[in-house]
Length: 123
Image 1 (cartoon, rainbow, N blue to C red):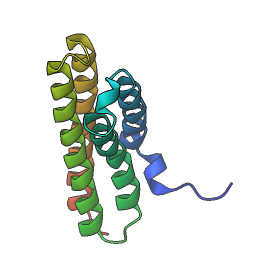
Image 2: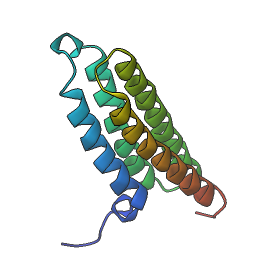
Image 3: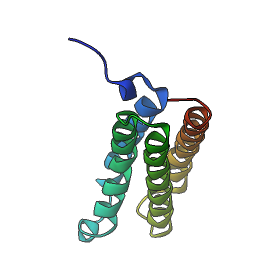
């Protein structure tokens, strides 16, 4: 099939991909009136995590790669905040929030490590 894209070799990308799918599943349980508000915003923030990892890894300079990883991290934090709001509104229960937030923290650590590794290397 040819050469594999760089982002597909990253564990953080694969963990984030599963996380995005789980966020999408969570959003299906939200009330219908949230479709164009919290549901939509949360889906966009979640999908931005993997999209920015992929786009960033296609860049030719470390500075650009790091910038996209920072955007990915920001989107991850945005989605985490929105998940907390969803729990406070009663759309998801505390156990579900704890599970997804635990995985959010793991992805955040991995993104930070990748960003630091790239920042400290020459490209």
